[in-house]
Amino acid sequence: MATTTTDASPKFRHVPQPSDYRPEITVNSSHDGLEFWQFMIAGSIAGSVEHMAMFPVDTLKTRMQVIGGSYPAPSIGLRQVLGSILKMEGPAGLYRGIAAMGLGAGPSHAVYFSVYELCKDFFSAGNPNNSAAHAVSGVFATVASDAVITPMDMVKQRLQLKSSPYKGVMDCVKRVLVEEGIQAFYASYRTTVVMNAPFTAVHFATYEAAKRGLMEVSPENADDENLVVHATAGAVAGALAAAVTTPLDVVKTQLQCQGVCGCDRFSSGSIRDVIQTIVKKDGYGGLMRGWIPRMLFHAPAAAICWSTYEAAKAFFEEQNGRSNLVN
Picture (cartoon, rainbow, N blue to C red):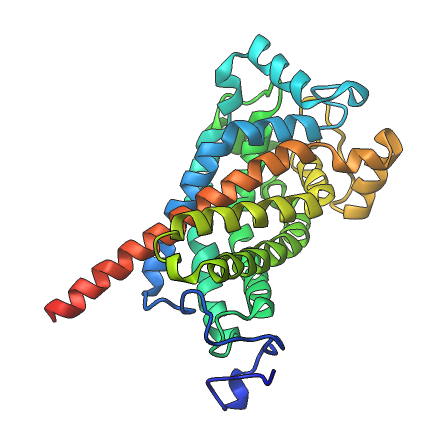
C-alpha cells in the first residue's frame, strides 16, 4: 500500500512512515490540542501515582540487585527478600526512601511526557501511528528526564538498602555531598541513559502499537474502553521493556549503592567494569538479578502511569473545550 503523508514539506520528514500506515485507523492526535504546561502536569501526576503505588516492589528489586551487601548471591530470591524485610523491619521497610522518589518522580515525569509529546508531534510528520517516531521521541524524553531523576534515584536506592546508614533524604544528601562530592549523585547517569534509551524506545513503540492494535480489534467501542486500552497497552509495554533492560538496571544499582552497606566500590563509572565484577562474582545470571520484581514493578506501573496520564490529558481536553465554547 502506498505511503500517505499529510505534509509535503521535506523538512518535516524526520522519521520514515511505516509501509503499513493506515490513516483511517488512528490513535489520539500527536498533540491532542494541549498546551506544554498541561502535558507537564499530566505527566507529573502520572509519574507520582505510578511510583508511589509500586514502591514496595521497587524496594525488593533494589535489595535483590545488590551484590556483596544485604544478601549472599547464591541464596537470593524474591520470597526470601520479602520475608526478611517483613521479619526484620516490618512493612515500613518496604517504603524506606519513598520521600526521595516523591521529590523526583513528579518533576522528572513532567519533563518526560512533555518532551515526548513535543518530539512525537515533530517526528511523526502527521502520522500518529508511526512507531519509529514514537521510539525516537521516547529516547529524547528519557535523556531529558534522567537528568532530573538520577540524583533522587541514587538517594532512594541507598535508603532502600538493608541497614542503610542514612537517617533520611536530607541526611543522605548532606553526607554524600561531604564524603563523596556532587559527582556521586550522577555516577550512574551515563548507565541510566544507556539503559533507559532502549527501555523507553521499546516502551513507547510497544505502547503505541499495542494501543492501536487493541483499538483496531473493536474500533466502535474504543471510546468506551479507553481506560482498559491504555492500561493493557501500558502493562505490555512496561513488562517487555523491563525484561530487555534488566542487566543495565543491575549495573545502575551497583553504581548508585557502591561503598554502602558492604557494596563494591568501583574505580570508574565504566559499565564494562561493573559487568565484569558482576559476572566474576555471580556469573552471567547475576546480570538478571531482580528481573522478576522489575517486571512485576513495570507492568502494573506502566498501566497505572499511562491510564493516569491519558485521564489527565482527557480532563485538560475537556476543560479546553469548555473554554473554547465560552470564548
